Image 1: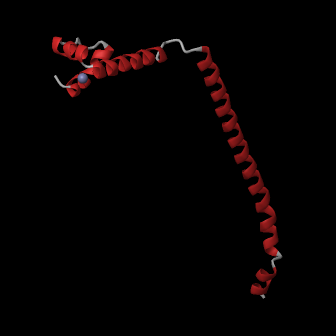
Image 2: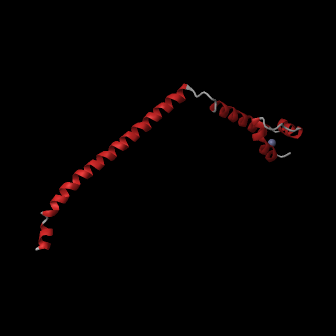
Image 3: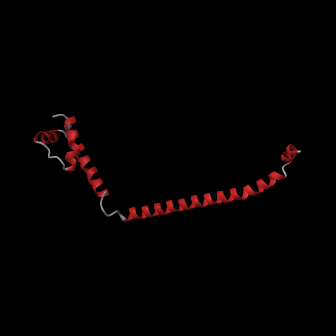
Length: 111
Ligand SMILES: [Zn+2]
């Protein structure tokens, strides 16, 4: 059995989804490299299991809370900026229209 063949089976082996065949076990006993790779894979999967634990750590909660507040503040600022820009635009529009009547060029063209 080749290392490549063993490695293709490793995700299942590490996850406990597939039983190692006699051939596979024999190779693992003989090949330190494959044994090491399988162990690493098992550790990674164990970490993933922990990470996906139903109860998030308090640290995760704090981080998430901070992130949510940050996002909320950002949204608030964005809305405020938008309102401010709209207000300024509205204020600018009126004087511009009034000025139009007394615009020298406009008067010249009428005469
Ligand atoms: Zn091997």
